Length: 233
Image (cartoon, rainbow, N blue to C red; front, side, top):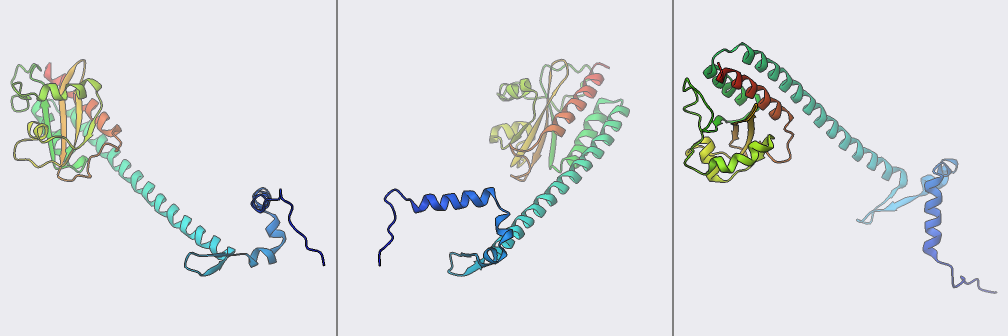
């Protein structure tokens, strides 16, 4: 009896690759041969063997759970954004009806604290901002410290800055005895830089560098416009 030997140039791996490539291009083949399809099995790392159908069902269930979780997260984000939109709208109306600068500052501090679920809200204005009626005296940055030079790049970029700041900066913006683990600094500007609206939280996760800032930026623009109008009044 003669033996059939493989030719030297035959490569078993290439044959497997051909089969895999063929099945990928013609997935309906297995539907035409259900007996072959159900007979296929895949060994697990633990030694157990599962049919291809069982394996596919497990994968589908896993993907389904992941999709449900993602959908739930998207729904939660949509609800949060809708709530923010409603609060932003109410704040806009109240700002338009306020005719006194001190009322605007107090209103923003009170509502933004709830608006963005934060612990501390502070206004910090540049020392050169003119206020003939002396309404900003409690909110000026210390001209004798380095804080003005520190925040100047943030003001010039006119974009909110979120995350953890160094302790000296935290003390200058929020106070010596205030424990702030994360914060959002919202530039206030009109024709020129006015200062910062500072949001601080005792949670390290509340404000981070990867979070969206569109509402913060819109808030800064709205508040800046109203303050500028009342400063000149």
